[in-house]
Image 1: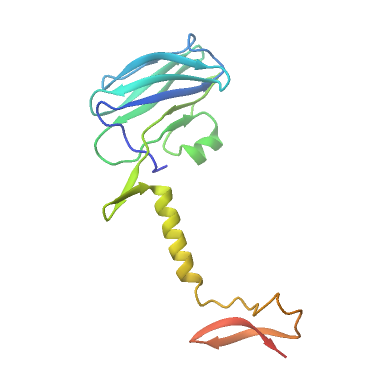
Image 2: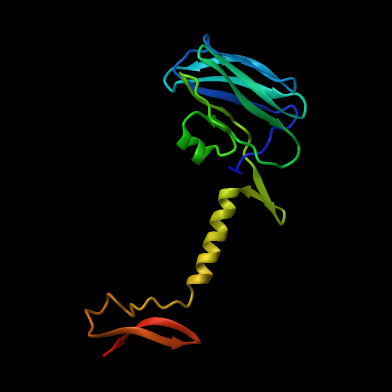
Length: 184
């Protein structure tokens, strides 16, 4: 969701649609702030039709996809500012809920989704720049390492020793209540 950034002026991206139609049956109208730099390409195996578009000026306009079943508008954002952009607009409610919460749905027969391949957003911290997943993994590992340290899981040296007789109950150690295995 927040892993994408808007296009910069002069930057190109691919606008693709999932459909059972061919590129000859579809047409694309690009807003004033953009231009189509290549004709449509149809990938029959993947059921996609793809156009290459380029941002010529800053703006927040809609490209319009025309199909025999109707028209679909997809928002194109070109801005130097960091803001949320929705990469996909889909007709299926569950995909919209999980993958494209910022877009409304549509019902145009053979077209199931329209998406713009916005560039990946990198997050900087202290002069280091990395993808958001890298930062998430690093923070998760550090948090997990420091939060699990010192926790007694009540297993003692299990399973190196066989089953023990005893009881499991709370015990206070270092000011923290923990459940530990205590011999009977």
